[in-house]
Structure formats: structure tokens, C-alpha cells
Length: 241
Image 1 (cartoon, helix red, strand yellow):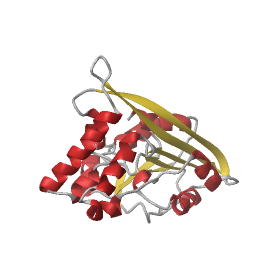
Image 2 (spheres, rainbow, N blue to C red):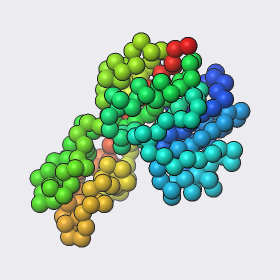
Image 3 (cartoon, one colour):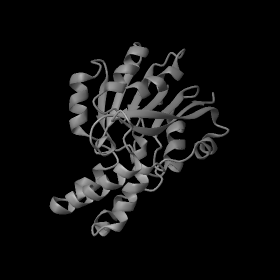
């Protein structure tokens, strides 16, 4: 939860009464918000019953939890903070969604979002390449997403004139262990839509082709580790009074 903590560090000094954590998962980020703002009413929102069941057990006891589609979600009342850590890269049409999220925040409130933005890295470029070139291309064409997250300029232009804007990117050098560490890293994120669709020998062939590409793109260091640069985009937008 280092990234969620880094995002919340830009919220210090505020005294919110109502916070929504969008894409809360098992409630880890909600717990960070609860610790930082013990007096705030917290609501975690996710579209996974499994994650919300865990959040009810593992997340802050004072929080409430909602199963909602974040592509259409709107709050019942205007919160002081809308927070989202590593969720909106899965959802399209940011040009429509993000201004609506800021509009939903109370005057003087904050929209705080973090997303991975590694889609031009070899790991993701090669995933799309393998998906488009194999016998499985027609099956997986609808889950290929070239640029689901925009640039800093794109988001700045969305919010310009609506309040204070703080947008930055950081590239983290992940030091990975194991035989195919980059494949393992993306297996629970970018790779999931493809492996969900493909089955049996076709799935095995897809993974083998992708594995070979990754081994060439991310060679091991002399000590056996693999360096995997991974970029993240952060934005904290304070709505005008």
C-alpha cells in the first residue's frame, strides 16, 4: 500500500467529514484513510462481492461498503474527498468520468487518484503484440486496450480552471526475483483479461509466446534479479469553493 500512502500524504492538513474510497478492494486503502482521518465517515466502493466480503472482515470497522459499478457511480451526498488507488485504469472514458467525479466533490474538497501508466512499456506493448498475432487474435481483440490512461497534459486539461491541480508521475524500479518475474507480476493485472478468455492448450501457447517475448525484453541482471521499471500517475485536484 505504499502508493496509496504516498497519495494520502498529499491530503495532510485536511479535516474531511465524508470520504469515498473507489475501488477499495479488501479495504487496505480504506484503512489508511481511516488512520489518517479518524473522524471521517468512510465508504468503500467496489464491484466485487469477494473483495467487499474481505473488506468487511479486514477493513476499518467504522466504514460502510457498497457494491457499485464505478463507470456509472455517483455519491448520494457530496463528499470532502473522493479517493481511488489503482482502479480507474480498468475503466474507459476518463474524459467524461473524471470531470463528473470532481463535480461530485463538495466545494473545497479533493479528488485524489493514482493509476499505473505503464502501457507503453515492453511488458504491455508485447502483450498486445502477442494478442494480435496469434490464432487467438479474434477471441481477445475486445480486451486489448492500447492507452487506457492518458498523459499528464490530458488530465491537466480536463481539470484546468476548476481548482488547484497537482499531477505527477513516478517510475519505480521494481527488483524482481524468480524465473519469469515480469510474467508473474502482470499475471494478476494486465494479463488477467486474456487468460480469463483463453483455455487449455491455446492459453498455454499464448503464455509461452508472451513469456519468450518478456525474457528477451527483460534480461536478468548479473545477480539473477530482473529490473522492471513501472510508472505510476498521481493526481490531486482541489475543487474551487
